[in-house]
Image 1 (cartoon, rainbow, N blue to C red):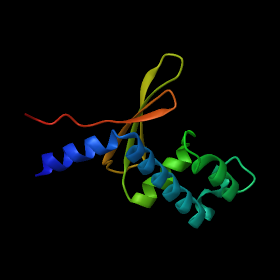
Image 2 (tube, rainbow, N blue to C red):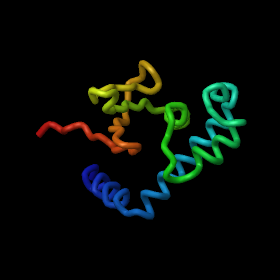
Image 3 (cartoon, one colour):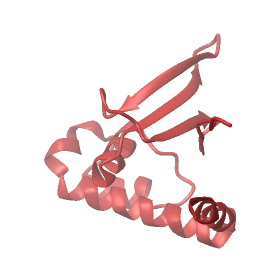
Image 4 (cartoon, one colour):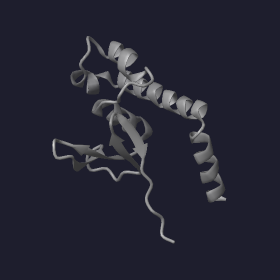
Amino acid sequence: MAAEHEDTLLRLFNEQLISDSVVQFLRLLTSAHLQTHADDFCNFIEAPDLKVYCRQEVEVMAMECDHVDILALSQALDVGIHIASMEGDEQQLVHHIIPEGADPSVRLLYQMSHYNILYRQTQL
């Protein structure tokens, strides 16, 4: 039964309309969390105020997520996130755990302004 649900999710997430709707929902959830926890985040944004930041940077599709956005989403969903990315001139693999010290249940690969989901290889 679990494999059937996984196949359904994979199929749905690969449909552009569904995928975009999920991303938009997560952007709105992130915006709401940032604004309802403004005291925790307002010092970490580069905008006149948090509402402007959310309206221009978080809620708009195709905008890159900043660290503060990912932290807010992690808190809103109560999940740890592991991000692997290539950084620096020598393109070294760097790992970020958000929030720090969490046991991540979501793993992402950050490449060229885009996040891809990483799946753990299952034992056969």
